[in-house]
Every structure is written in structure tokens, then in C-alpha cells.
Image (cartoon, rainbow, N blue to C red; front, top):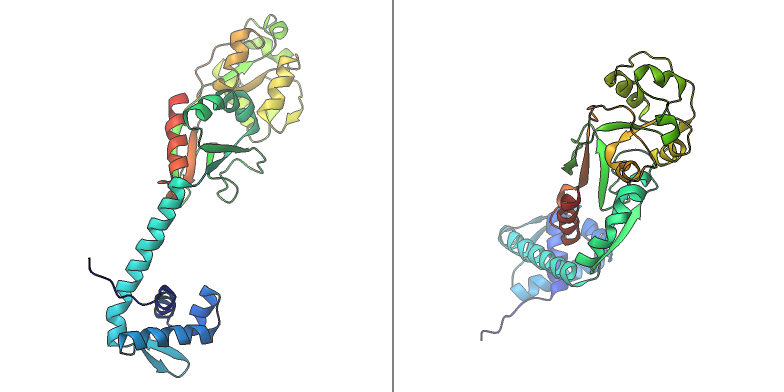
Length: 292
């Protein structure tokens, strides 16, 4: 077997950074060493090669002919080492995944299904982040987001459509008994949710109650609170159907009037484009597509 004669890795890293940044000072800042250390490491590499690699000019450096030949080879080799090192670490280190999700979706849809994910992928530790300030995905807080949007086109993000939902109007069984047609809706409050206040008017129009004046109602900051208020007889709430399927099935909530109105947007799993190949993200996407 041929024994390879290679320069020390520290000298190659110093040369690559200095060549890429065209500055010993900038290379030192990037590698968190002194400028003198970079200078010594590059000089050591040049001695081992038997030739200079840089032209030392006033206030700057430039690659000479040998440096121009050597730089792309060293850079490619270091990139391959770094990439493969990260890949091996990802495949062998304990994996966690933080999912940004609205609190209503977490409580009423995701959490009841998470046990199947844990059983299928026990190596992935799942974290849920429901502390949202708005409806959009925040890649600084989470690895993926399960979100609703009408515009799945933000730059550098990948959106995978999971489901489109019908809007349903639901209320307590007691209120439902008093609703035999659209005109009866005027006797009850629509329970509005911040960010979705137009849903009630759209749904009312879809069941033939366009322009019907409604009783005033409180404004809730989540569907979860509005659904609970509806179950307690405080009015009618308009929500995506998948959030109340269980309640309608067990009779806690009733949909007194039928409508085929669909939400204008869709429910997506979203993540940074550059992270699409990560194992935990791929596995979660595979799983949630089977649940949606």
C-alpha cells in the first residue's frame, strides 16, 4: 500500500482560508487564530511543497501560479471531508426534530397521532413548538413547520402540500336543535378567531345567510379556545373540518348546516430548502403524509 505524504491539516486549512478570502487577517478571524499563526502555517506549507503559494503585496496577498493550481484541489478535498464528516455524524448521533405547529392543531390532531411516529422512528426525539407569534414558519425556532398558508412561495423554503380543508360551522347540540335553516343563525353569536375573522362571513354566505346580522361575540386568539366556547354553548365557530372531526363523531359538537366551502389556502409541511435531505425531516414528512 502506498504511503501518502500529506501536509498537516492545519496548514491546508490556513492556506484554503487565506486563498479564498485573499487575506491572512480575514483567514485568522475566520479560524479564530492570530494573523501570525496563519502566516506561519502557510509558510510551513510552502516549505513542505518547496515553493511559494502567494505573492505578498502591500496590504494584501494574491495566489501565484502554484497557488492557483493548488487552491481548488485543497478546497475540494476539505469540502468533501467536511461534508462526509457531517453526514456520518447525522447518521450516528441521536436525532431530534422540532416541529412548529399551531396549538389547536397540536392538541386536536398531531399529539393524538404522535405515538405512532415514536413507535416507527424511536431514534428521533420529537419537540413541539406552539409558541407562535404569527402564522408563518420560523426556521430559527423549528426544523419544520406544519402551517396553513395561502402563499406557499417564500424564498429558500420548501412547501409540501398535506391537505386542503373544508370549513364547517359547529356548535353545541342544544344550539343545533334551534337551527333548522340559515335564518336561524341570527339568534346566535359567531365565535371569531384572530386572523380568521372573514371565515364566518364566507361560511354564512355559503349556506345562504349572506349579510345576516349577527350577535356580537368575543374574539379568541386560537381555534382551540373558540372550539371550547362553542362546545359550552356560547355560539357557532367556523373551523377547518379536521380540527373537530372527533367532536362531531362523538356528539360534543354538531354541524347544523351543510356547506362545501373550502379554505382558500392549504396545510403544508415547510422547511428550509437546504435541509431537505436531513434524515429526521425526510422521515417526518413520510410519516405525516400518511396521516394527512
